[in-house]
Image (tube, rainbow, N blue to C red):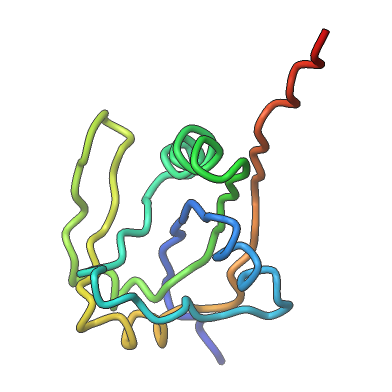
Length: 125
């Protein structure tokens, strides 16, 4: 008899350059962190990730997506959830030094679940 390990659903707002990586079929790992990035903050809430994608990423680059993925609860439970704004603005903080272990704890594929585009430009008179 097989029992599946418990998982936690996580969300991540994406910029266009990240989106291109996630759209590869079967994508299961996040790309390496840049040296100036001290950690990885996946959102606990789809709504919060959507707000970042639609408000910040669309403003900065014209488009924003939200990715959803699962990670082993036994790994995620090591990290406290942090509230970084309103009640639904919650995320985990995965330190950069634990990032490879975090990637190894991802179960299944990372998928795009929402897309936000900039509104069309107004026609010039």
